[in-house]
Image (cartoon, rainbow, N blue to C red; front, side, top):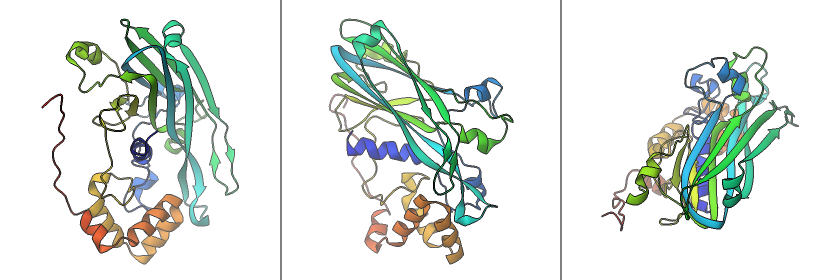
Length: 313
């Protein structure tokens, strides 16, 4: 995986994980919000807490390849865990640990026999006292031959985790969910078709692909077609992180300047709370306080040449 794809994937993974002012006492951090949450299947079947709650993500895309084409799938998400920030038992805090499920297979084999892969992460408590529930899920992969060189690939990720007895507490439901779920799919000896800008002869087929809770885009170096980044939010093909960005701010990379300036205005007491909340919050604060004047000026704004496409002037 290229560094460009990895940085975008990490941004997706932690988008919304922490929000300014990055303190656990802030309501928007006690009510954590993330894109791409796959809730327990039982919770959704029972009506969920919102009509938009979903227990699965479905990916459909077109692949140009032959019998030798192999696929590598990496599904990533966060698992939330209960933590006592700063040793204060009255202030529980949901931190997160990264999870990944990987799978490789032949597209020719998928076109004959669909594949199911169950995965599980057992619950428990680590040395710091952070507790997690067990998580269970399933990957379903299939491919349908369109013609000699074109296949339609389908991947579905489902959260099979059992709901709690109460089934209504939001923090408990999130602790049993796949949070910020997204995927990276790579091909060997094959190419993906852009769903945003397909060639005319494949436009109708690309438009018929059914993606649910997923937005697949081409990723990596411009013009490469062997990597697909599947995002829970809308992106364009070949997304990148602005080079002026000093690091992740979790809110969004487009507002680095104002967020950095506001972080610098936090009081000493607010900064103390930030540092006691989460390792990522501590790193964010330390990095922001170390920014030079030149780095801050780089965030102020820059005029770039609009994206040009040789094939589509």
